[in-house]
Length: 245
Image 1 (cartoon, rainbow, N blue to C red):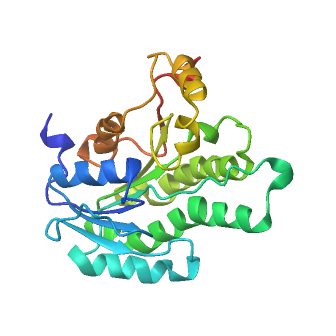
Image 2 (tube, rainbow, N blue to C red):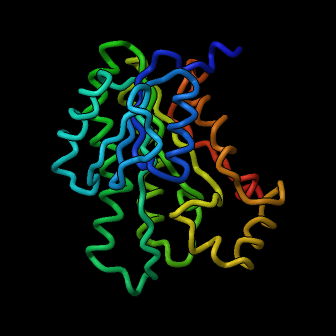
């Protein structure tokens, strides 16, 4: 059983790995035996230079995505695993959404995961094995105030994940997504900065608490390993039962 959850010898690229859930997953992949390339605007300060390397890049520039993919492949070789954890939430109410805010949100949250995957799929296909792990959200299926652009991008991620599975799983490439509940990260700073709101969110779960960073590790390792050999096109909600109530 332990062997099927191993990522020993795999090469992974994790975007948004300088902090939050991306960092947690990247570090768990390293502990599991993978070599990991972190890609984020802010260079990850935890990488050791041997089993993990950091690349500083502006992922919101779609024209630069092929070059970023090539730079990643130059570090340890073409990745077997891609984790698309980078994201943005402008939290603009519907009547105040700007064109710039809308396009930036859609580009970073939806377009980059596709084009980065598209650039890395050939290497995965050559080996007959690959894992793409996207980040969906509670807002992939539910509407939140101030989340119209973010929700549109995360609804898109759910369908993108299914479409990736249809396109590439016959080549041994499994595409799935995690949909986290409320975890304490930079992206959810405004939520956890309001103690009453954080408490209401915790009460909404079946477990009775908000997420801890380590809660994402098991689901991520499952979807990045051989254990998910027959799982593709799925959205796994890691939300303590928030969406069950």
